Length: 231
View (cartoon, rainbow, N blue to C red):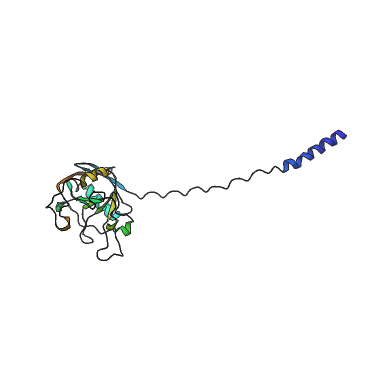
């Protein structure tokens, strides 16, 4: 009896010791990172020039008006056999500048496109940006220029006086900036060009052999022949 009592006492004496062993608190939950917003939709085209290929992502989501306009020229092969005809070095070393090209045969041009300013699209004239050349607002057609360096002064600026609508960026070079630099460094004519463009026109324009979608459009289904019922 005494032995049994001592055993029970020993068990109860041990219980408080175990009760004091409180497990450590769980670490605070780390919130899951917010999912990244998907990149704006683009359509890639490959511009094959006499100096090599240039891959361009057209901003079909952020600049839908201008990108769709250019894509129509691409799909109708209007840009094939166009050329780069202007190379302008803003700085003597060419670290900042632009090359300009496009359709010069008016018969291949579509009517002018509505102006789509950078204040609407959120795009900007920095390295690799491609933008439409224009005179007055609303006169731009399929002539374009590619930026080397930073030319954000060409963005729309509502606070500026005069023509402050800027130029319409509609895409970006994703591969082939080395080709763009080659074009910038080809010989220019000392006499070609009018006004401020004199001395910026390429002596022997760089041919644009073709411009095609990187992923071709699926072929259209063949039209079904009408069923002729015989009497």
